[in-house]
Length: 205
Image (cartoon, rainbow, N blue to C red; front, side):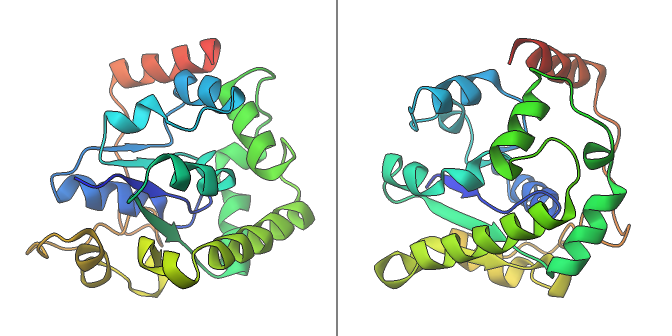
């Protein structure tokens, strides 16, 4: 299976794509605070070990290094989840990770600082990052690279019809998982094992 990377910013439909990939039988990792990713990126090593273990890797740090990831994984496909800027800002205002301060040294602190340049909600800065990221993605994946990118907008109804042809898989006879969009679908509470793993990643990352 061709490696797939999600390079949308948080709260743009990344959870929906993650659940869709799993529904298609793909191995998917979404926003894992994997210390290996942090260590490799800090060392300038973009052959991410974590990507070798899954088909789709969607991590909140990947949007800032997608050109290097593309070079490190020839033939990889990229899914750029998007949404309206104002609705994105309103969504960020409501979620916990923008309201609560991240512990210094934690993976969450690292990811926020790496992607947004701030560790607390800062609307002006977030809007700038949103627009700059959109510009960078569209400019990079122009011309001969265009076929490596899928621009995917869950909020406007994108689903299996757009995703499956891009991945080269059949369209399943099940509803597309619109997770965390308008409250239509909500994720269950992570297992105790998963919560412990995430906490360990936070402490050791």
